[in-house]
Image 1 (tube, rainbow, N blue to C red):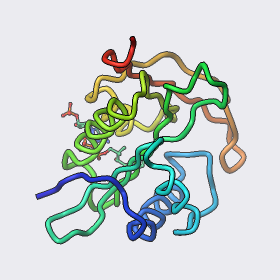
Image 2: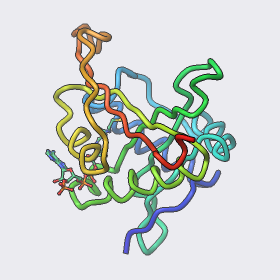
Image 3: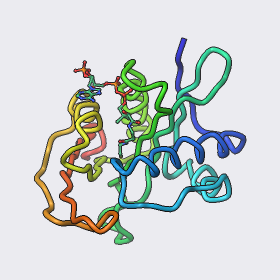
Image 4: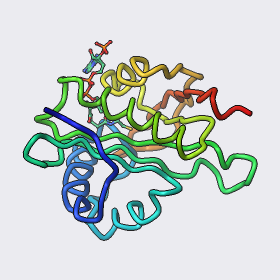
Length: 167
Ligand SMILES: CC(C)(COP(=O)(O)OP(=O)(O)OC[C@H]1O[C@@H](n2cnc3c(N)ncnc32)[C@H](O)[C@@H]1OP(=O)(O)O)[C@@H](O)C(=O)NCCC(=O)NCCS
């Protein structure tokens, strides 16, 4: 059985490995440098404010990670979280992305966020599909938002309101 739980410091190595595989695929992020556990640990340390979750199998192996970060530094945006989601390639297409992102919406609600958003390459159909399956809508697309390996790429902005926190 696959379950989700808050990320813990001992997950940093597995998260870095999975994230780095996603970076190497060149279909999920403009980032090109692999991550280490040392890059991930500060995110886990800050997870009371910015939730970080992992999906694990029955044996405790980490299969995927979803995490939030600040959208902007300005106080008026404190309730908006940006998220990233990465699964081990062998764990994709089995509903685990949907499980993790659903759990993240719950964690973001508990942490007081009123909105989650992300920017997704227009050709990342799996990522767009998992967002749509979890109640995100397409806001629009930024054209030529950055270069990856010398190629300009467009990104779709997706957002999901968390109505309980729109007080
Ligand atoms: C994007 C990612 C997290 C999706 O997770 P996943 O576990 O493979 O997706 P799921 O199996 O939960 O599928 C969720 C929905 O998306 C659909 N979907 C999954 N992969 C798809 C694909 N390649 N094309 C179209 N739809 C797809 C599923 O049919 C399902 O729809 P449904 O709920 O309406 O039936 C995963 O593929 C991944 O880690 N990709 C590499 C990293 C990445 O691109 N991250 C996003 C950048 S922020």
